[in-house]
Length: 386
Image (cartoon, rainbow, N blue to C red; front, side, top):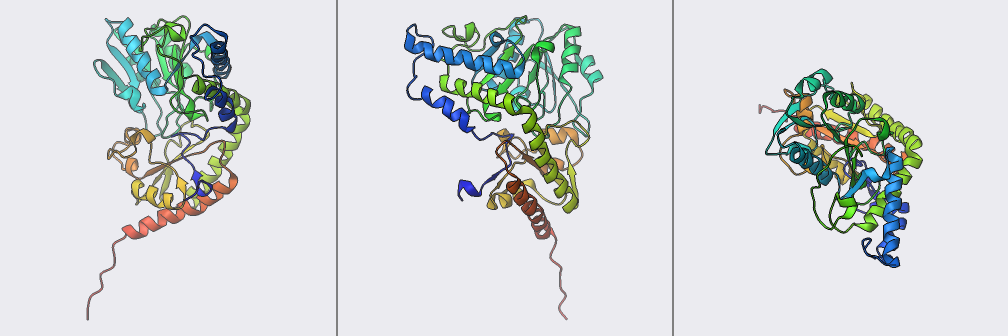
């Protein structure tokens, strides 16, 4: 199968590199290879490029450039915040989070964690969240938008509750960045994590927003890079690419959101109308404009993925980080503990480089695949010999 035949509808897993990002990165993979910490003019080009990337990302997030620390991605950023909170508030060993977080937040050990449930639409109960905050709570960490369903949490309200309670607030915004307008300087968010490869940057690079009034203890100690908040020689080319991806995202944010939502809605509406026994996970909640998580009666998502792959259609059964695991989606189980949506759902996520022709093909083949699976699952009639 060639790349030209691929219909990539898994943009929540990762995104295609924007050609403009590649162009911006190339000189720092070839000519401008200096170490940005060195003192001569050749290295200064790398330093200047990192500073520009920081300014571009700050413009997208609505914060100050000095509040940004470049990391290896969302997982490191999440871990850095949680470790810092537990270190700085040694007498406070309690965290509050949601039951639908990414595994980088869920898999925290060595502390007491209250995981908040969600309703059937994926919504949090803010009164329950407020009640869960205790005197020994060191941090509240709630994702901005869910990676599997696209459900958006009311982060500004949560941040305000935490501010009133005097507890630091962190949001994993890996899926929300570049999809939702942000103005962090006007919101009492203490920490925010993001990853470049979710908005057409490269893999292995991300950032952590740290409000300038918030204390932070580095996860990685080293030579004083990133103003002493993250040791290690900077990944210059990827950071440059992140900055360009942020600039592109800000440039296209409103138009892109509208166009992608139009594709998502057309696809979703057609599938719901043409396939019986299908429901939209998170339909009753605010959702990202690019995400459609659909539950199909009478199928196993793993089998559907194989048949769709043969048609060149790339989607997922949930988080890409859990692909290959035999465990059903914890997100969908939290939304419907007594149902089997977690094993019969497919996530389609759309992006900047999808075309209407690709959506047409997906609309054509998804119903056919579901019907084929249902037919194969029906028992064969038994004929009685006469």
